Image 1 (cartoon, one colour):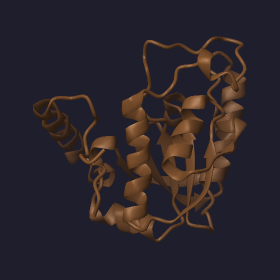
Image 2 (tube, helix red, strand yellow):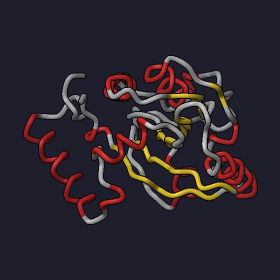
Image 3 (cartoon, helix red, strand yellow):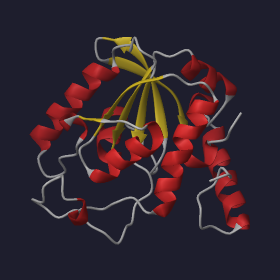
Image 4 (tube, one colour):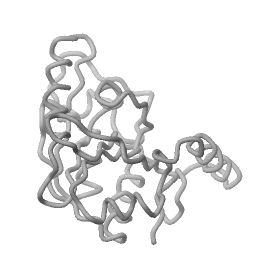
Length: 204
């Protein structure tokens, strides 16, 4: 994908989508998408990248009780999502962003996002959502918080997950394929440094 907009949209709608994102983020400089300060921060490493899986086929549904290895019984990436995942990896490489460990929810849409973007992924149960089991979900968020609060020593840590865990952890709602950048402060604490939606991705 050569343009920084979702595929399948008319040019005028792509431009409108980008404009709307800019307007929505303009009121919060700390959360501005794709600014030079944020890219510089990532280039220096030591950040945690919370990435919601890329765009999916909303006509599909996860079947309760289905094994995670059975992708046919889950909601999966659509072609736009696959293109966006590839673009994420291409832009980070072009901008010389060091990527260390890549941890992912075991759902196929998350693992595929990670594989297409970074060529690798380690499944981590804590990144899976537990929509109907509050104690399990809270325990998993605690695990993620502990990791997100510690500065990675090897590049930037990437965590590929779902909207619900990201919202519980940070209070922020993110779109499919959007990256939320966290700066670890130790002891399970972190600051939100910024966010990069798919529309905010561009080669330097």
